[in-house]
Amino acid sequence: IQMTQSPSFVSASVGDRVTITCRASQDISSWLAWFQQKPGKTPNLLIYGASSLQNGVPSRFSGSGSGTDFTLTISSLQPEDFATYYCQQANNFPLTFGQGTKVEIK
Amino acid sequence: EVQLLESGGGLVQPGGSLRLSCAASGFTFGNYAMTWVRQAPGKGLEWVSSISGSGGATYYADSVKGRFTLSRDNSKNTLSLQMNSLRVEDTAVYHCARGYCDSSSCYTGYFDNWGQGTLVTVSS
Image (spheres, rainbow over the protein chains, first blue to last red):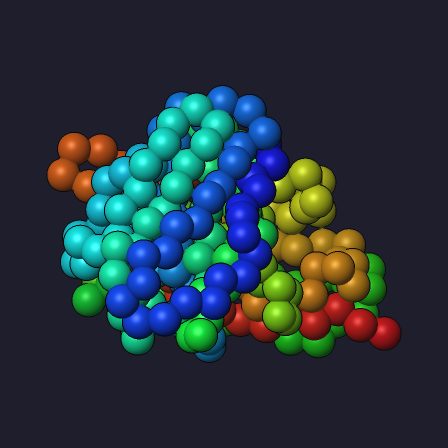
């Protein structure tokens, strides 16, 4: 299953609402995760099951979608949110990641 | 505190072999699926292989199938990845990661805690 994220790059300001899209090449139901990765750090699981927030993740992060189209939304971008975001399907093996979306400061 | 510590990386020639290990602590190892994910320098994430908590089920990316073997020793809290017939394109930082469990279920396909990784460089 191929995962395609858009856009690949986002330039945004603190306080902006940011939306990242992930499209699966076939139906994956709600078997989707979102990760955040900061430079030099390991990825951090933000959302699983397309919309379930992992413990400790701020509520400004939300996920939606099912089937083939999914969205990660950051409602009000904070300085610590500038990072690269990856979607990943967990519907079946082989597991696959999107190519990543880099969120940078405008 | 959950800790995952990878070791075994290094420089190897194409066609060579390496064995990566991941030492786990801070949780009941055998209750969790485990996974290896790699990241080539400056590139994105690539899933490599996963194994169930009991070790009875293993899964591999097409790019490594037949060359890599994943195993675990629950008595020693250790995950191992035997990598044979290494290729230049296997060059990456290899991370082990723990399968995610919420209040109701444990998932092989989601991962929460990640180790810092071990660098594998395949070059002549």
